Image (cartoon, rainbow, N blue to C red; front, side):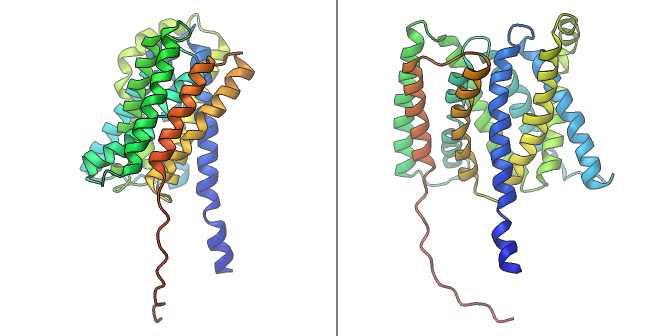
Length: 307
């Protein structure tokens, strides 16, 4: 009985990762679809409002009305994580959708796991491995190919720069989230971060109201879905997975997102990145994968404790 429970336990974190990858992939397509009707700020505010409401309901349901706020340092970390990842990243992410296709955005943004590895070296004093260096070199070559594709007019170089900025914000948010999760649980951290991000975007409230008067129902529903799915459930599931697996392994799972985005974008929007951009994206993600590789630890038999 105990052995069966131990074998099935990882199924929930794995399912959380799969669901998050699918939901996050859909958000790349939806921001591209919404670009013609909603500007980046209002789209982000609608998304975070829906996310905050959903997370508040989830928190009340899971905690049965008993909310336990973390300490002040943890509150500061979650607020910072929310402003960087939920607010700034979401606005910049939406802005990229006004310039380049969803697949290319996904390939560039998914440099974030590599940036997380570099950030762990700089801020957490982890060792700078040869695999991380090799991954950086390969990924830079891939970004070079994507840039060449942009210089031919098939992609907008401004959009590539914006997508790179989104990747930096993504990585920064991920690193701070890991610190925040040392002091509180994933659901509480996600709720507080989403609320902080929403507050940071309140200056867009007037523009949001004005644009809603002319925005189509499908676009509004898409923004609400992104708040409920990719934001509320996605970040909650992501935090849950990070509490069960090493950060690098969880971050590496996002490498599947660009492939899913390209397929979704092709089926729904009829968009496919240029061939050179796809090749560059594949090279970039290969570099990220190299950087995330870990040598299997040697198994050292240990004496069983006497009980």
